Length: 514
Image (cartoon, rainbow, N blue to C red; front, side, top):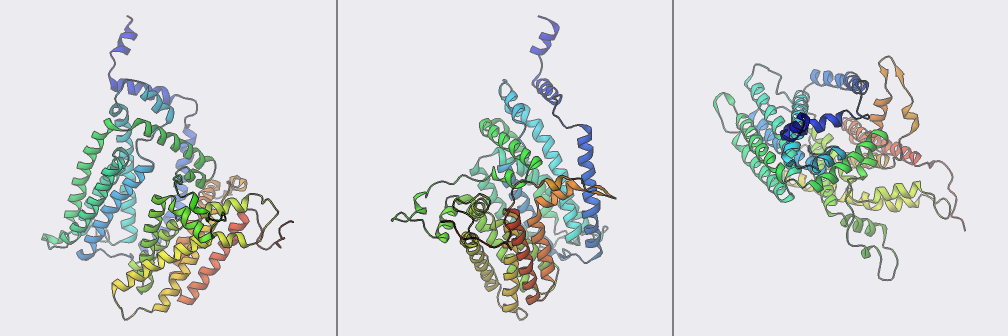
């Protein structure tokens, strides 16, 4: 046997994995240095033009959430830790750190290498990058939204640094746990996290030396990150490789859609397949049920997606109600914006009605163009569901909070109604997207460089941008002015959404051809 053959036969698993990755990295379609430089240029341009002014403005004003009293800092820390675990688990179930290139995964699976040999290196690299990104995001959020680092020499700043470091370590390992462990283990971890957060919040309020109320939360996050990380990495040997191959193929297809087309085409790949209740759409006499019943049945055909939508709508309704009923800024403004974003996210998951409306408006009708009854009939279900769930949750939150002398029911109801109208208009604008307009790919030369890529980025997330900007603007206005402003913004969104489908709202409608 030659020396090369002997070396190949006696090579360690680590060297074999390195050789496969080296050969794969030399393929012809890998990103060039110019591609990486252009991505870095866009990131810096986005930060300087859009992020930096917001950061400077936020730092110059009073932070919306004060953590100086330990009674406020402790619950916020417990909630942040729970959100880090839940967010990491949920992200891992859809797009985890073990997702890799389909062909590379196929090569690894075709060898006798154990999964932990080639998946361990991938997981460690991506978890390190995720930890760095989480640390930057949490630190930036603490700088913009809280007074945690207003006094760098104070004891609260050191505790906050320890807590953010623990969160930066906890979120990535929860991300790996969410993908590597089965659903039952994820549910147990989510329930245990909720119980630990509920127990940790009052514990951190106890008086400790030098006001060290955040040290228990920081120590708990660091300990949980170590235990979860060790258990998650041990689970690499039992990963379902067939399921991982399907996830990798779907992620590769979604990545191609996101880079070459629209984001909603990529997200469509992650929609759950409707199951059951097919016959419930038809009455016993053979006629279709009404639009409200059809929307409810279609929502019940995807129970997981609908349950998430109800949870988001309920949480958003509570946040909107508390934000509208609380005078002044600070935490109320933050709750108002978060509630609007949650309702916006839940309104798109309440059923497949939006998608059906988009297809019905875009596709050519069989008997000629129809009037405005189609959107009106189709929107009955999402509007009814959003208003019912959000309104019920908000009213229950206000009743549980108790009567307050400065709360005006009419003002709160009008402000919340304006927010719902704005959210539904922004959702209509987002769901009426078709393919990426070619006009957005034309170079946009400015003194800062070519901003065409930033324009595409903003077009992808225009619905969320409208919701957040409109919520922050309307919250500062009186109730009547806020409702009128929200109605005007929703009308503009509806007009722009119809234009995206190729229909002019001002064009005269013709009757159905005979």
